[in-house]
Every structure is written in structure tokens, then in C-alpha cells.
View 1 (cartoon, helix red, strand yellow):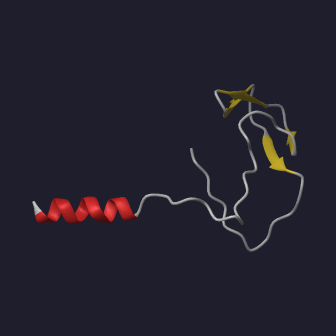
View 2 (cartoon, rainbow, N blue to C red):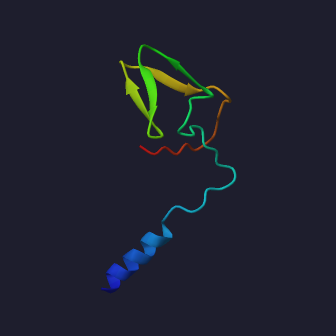
Length: 75
């Protein structure tokens, strides 16, 4: 029982906190403003998520370049 309680406490401490002010959202779930695409495929926004259709394609962010950064992705 103590092991279970300790695990629950450690799990609660590991939950994501409010993101720091330095974090930015690159995809808002509603538009592809600031993004460019190349290739025969297409990207469709569905339920605030990106879905691919029609083959392979590449989507990249065009508003700025990044270096020495950490990118967090939910999939």
C-alpha cells in the first residue's frame, strides 16, 4: 500500500505544469497560417488535428528559423 501511495505522489508531481512564457504554440489547431507545404499530399485540419491525405507531403514552419531549441510534439 505504501508503494502505491508513493507511486501516486510521484506521478502527481510529474504531471505537466503551466508552460513557461518562453514556450510558443506553432500550430493553433485552426489554421495553417505560417506553414508551407510541398509535395503531392495535402494536410487537412480535422478536430484541431492535422490529417494527411492524397500521398506524401512535407509541412514546415515559415515564420522564423529555430536553433538550439527543444520541440515538444503530441501525437
